Length: 120
Image (tube, rainbow, N blue to C red):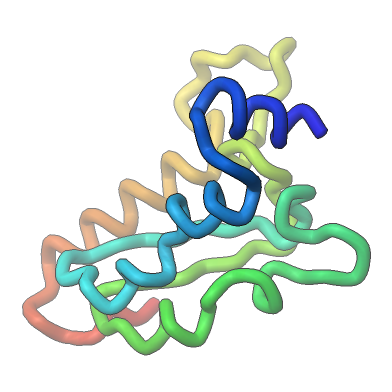
């Protein structure tokens, strides 16, 4: 309900369907021609409502079809950034998130490859 109010009143969309059509990434997947890492958590509450799972909602097959895209889905990570530290452990610690380390490893790997399909 809050989403619908924001989408209509703040962003000016007619309804949620129009909003989702405008923000959809699916039409752009075939156009990706540089290395792209897609990280997804299997327990992300935005993609796991009821019995649905990420691979049933996201265009995973299309992501795998593009040689420039690596799709990685972990079992856990929730919605924001795969946090591995608590506030009491310190937000500034170097290994705060899995996302940071995965992105660094991906960019190191991608920069060392030629025009090959990126595989881990």
